[in-house]
Image 1 (cartoon, rainbow, N blue to C red):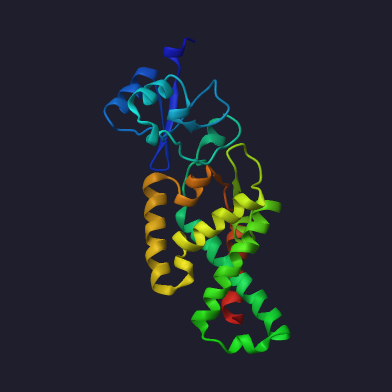
Image 2: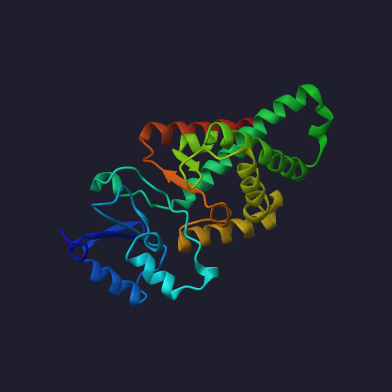
Length: 247
């Protein structure tokens, strides 16, 4: 099969489309129906990749793009090439990521409260909003430690979300810390309720429309989702309820 006869697949709106011919796919790019970051795949590839990384489309976008537009989206990658493995790999799942983060905050808040109650109980007399902001800030360092050693966090582990660099390696502590600080400021609004609500909305919109968050884009990071089974879903709900009742 020649290059022009290859069958191509692409993902848009969290759904795999195709097959289409090379010329058919190129036509979609030329008409603006698809952008340079859309994940594409053909049988000679090991995994989906952004169109701007795959020839002949890479050359096409290089001719069209200015240097400031050449960074690629850190889309989720998935190993293997079977249709079953490919499907669903690029679902962005912003709500799943939100629940994972909130679970991490609740769990860390619960553990912190137990430790503080023994070591410095006077801190528990602070206003709840102050305590919440302190938890969100200290979590920056704990999250960075977990991401640089475990590659995930308790919430991400429960909901089968992993984070890697562009070479599929676990982040270094410095990389993870930069990301966590970015999330703390631009994603969580430093934990202040009103500001946090606004930044969460912007983060949700960005993830849904562009397929990435600003903090993952800045670090060239890769977020991977796997299917969450019924057991994990029930376990997560149960743990959520238990943590809320005990906080």
